[in-house]
Every structure is written in C-alpha cells, then in structure tokens.
Image (cartoon, rainbow, N blue to C red):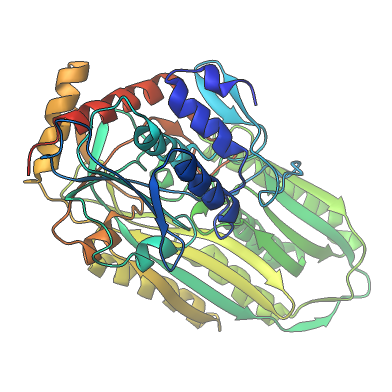
Length: 485
C-alpha cells in the first residue's frame, strides 16, 4: 500500500486504505463487516445489523442542526472480484494492493474496489468525525450489491428514520443521478451430449485475452469486445469449415462484467491444423481492425494440451455455438427520453462447462419493464430453440426519475455554489439500490453521486484523486444545506 492515507482528504483515504486490507468480495463480506462494527464501537457510534447482514450506523445531529431533515448516507460493502489471468490474488483472504499512479489510485492486477469503497469510506468518515456539521445522520451499509442486491432486497420497512437518502455509488464527478435501470439475471443450462474423439484428432486450447472488459451497465455502449461472443464467432466458422470439434468452453466470471477472456478446448485433424492456425491469424487481424479504437491489446493464442477422450456430438456443438453466436449482446436500444442514455442492453457474461452441462449467464438491463421483457423473450427464444433450459430470476426495479425532487434542487444549488458550474442531472444504465429502497421507503427523496471511477468491474479500475476531494467537499456542503423538517 503506497501511503494512500497521505492523500487528501486524509480521513477518507485513511479509511479506504484500511478497507483495502479487509477482503470483501460479494458473498464474503464477513471481515469488512466486522471491521466496520469494530470502528463504530471504537468511536462510540450506534451500529446495528439486520437479518440479512446490512449495517445501520446512527449519530445525533450536531449542535444547532437538530431541526434538519434526517439524512441516510448509503453505500455497499462488497466489491467485484476481477483479476488478470496471471494474478494469484485470492479475494477471500488477500488485501487489495492499491497504489498511487500519477493522478489516480489503482491496484496491481485486480479490481481496486473504489466502486463503492470510496463512497463507503466517505460515509464512514462523516459519521466518525467530530467536526462536521450535519443533522440527524444514518449510514446504511448494504451487502452483496454487486452479485444480487441481497442487502437491498432484504432491507425492512421502518428500519431507516431519515427522509433523504444520498447514494454514493455513482462514478462520474459532476454528474448527479436521479434514476437508474432495472435488471434481471438470465441463467441458461445447456445439456451436453458426447461421443468419442475422432481417432486422428489432436487437442488444443484456444484462448482469447487482452480485452478491456468493464462494467456491463456503464460501459456497455463503448463498443468493447465481449470475449464470449468473439470466441463463439470463431468456433462457428472453424467448426463449419475445418471440422474443429469442441470439448469444452469457458469465459467470463461475472454476469455484470463484460468478459475479458474466454477459452475453448478443441480437437482438429492433423490435415486441418495449419488451415486452422491460418484461420486464427486471419480472425485476429480482422477483430483487431474492427476494434482498433477500443481493444488494442486483443490477442488469440493456440497451444497443445493432453488429448481428450470425448468431444461434444456434432449436433450438440452446432446448437450450442450457433446459440452463443446468435444471442443478443450489447446495446439493444437507446433511450428516446434521455439523450445519450442506454435504454436496454444485455451482457453475455459467463460461460462455464461443468460435467454434462454448459451454464450460461446474462444480465439484462432496461429503463422500461416492457423492453426488459422483450429482451428476455428474445434471449429465451434463441436458447430454447437450441434445446437449452432458460430461467430468469433476481429481477430488481429501476429507479424512476423524479424531476420535482427537492433534494435534486439542493444538489444543483450546492454544486453551483461550490464549483461554479451546474452539475449534469442524469439517469444511469446501471443498477443502483435506490429502486429497491423505494419499494420499502416510497416517500424517501433520493439522489446518487460520487467521484470519477474509470473501468469498474475490471482490473484496470482506477479512481481520480482530485475528484475524491471534490466529492468530499460536495458531500459536506450538501449535509450543511439540508433544510429543516
């Protein structure tokens, strides 16, 4: 750790530095939760845990602010565990190796966890400080936001007392969010049929790597390559023209991250081997040309592996690869109401070969429920025609924009006063927990903001140091400007 606590604001960076030492991948938040509870105890702050593992910290208003509306600062404690293929990092046990890189803080070979770690650090810094003016204050720390929003789903009505909720999970300084997309998980189970490997075939592994990946919501419109889709495209051509047979296929690791790597174990006849190698080289050149602006490090590798006794039957292989190649991925439609915002998208995030089944995960996002349902039917149609079982679950609602929101006016006025410009009021094509909070707290006024974080959900994740200072200044000014009840 390269002295993050020497950065300004020191109190925020010091807490974030401690946070990096506490492993917190989704579904494994025990250590970071215990750390937060111990900090609360050390600072004599009330801290309670609900039935699903969310934490609520409470502090009375500072002198003279008792009549203000209560504010809930909200962040999630988990982070996305993504790493480069050469990294030996264990997210369940190892600390994040964060360091300063010029104007940014990033991590060596892994995601940094600034999403939503900086927002959490700032929220904790406020409630643990004795010299910050605020009205009645709560900090809500949810679990498992990145892998299913379990904490937000489990939040009970009546647990929070505040009238205003400030979500700190946005990733562009100068933008304030008043709405977000809803989403649903797609789980596909494709049964595998096998037969003996042709006697003269040799076995190889094909790997696609070097892609940038990223957040399947905020980065989906940037034209980045999806390793799973690229591999399916390659295998369709190779299986048709060169008799390549498929043993197994794997790619991606999270349904909400654009896959950076994908791998297939294949067999090919010696007579077709050189033709297949030439096909790989031509495909690599083609993709590099297509994605020259977004994927300069794209690469394909081929190397021999021990021979496999069985391959997928020709019919099974054809149906699987055709479905993967044909299923919708990326931006389906841009919003007509909000310029520049994606309305509906899908991410083919994970392919895993396990025994007699290939498991596939997609995440569909949409600002409109009807469009989300349309995307579901499109994806289900493709996989069902191929003989797969398709299940949809984990649906979460979008956060409908409220243009008359009082807190939005406060956010505008405070930003203009502090920085001399008007913030962009936006709707984000990513899942924020606010939509679920509205289910239990329909009258609560909400806004979301944060510092500039680039490439979340990928090992290239980094947070801009200057904007963390701006985010902190903005947060303190907002708390001071909250009106009386």
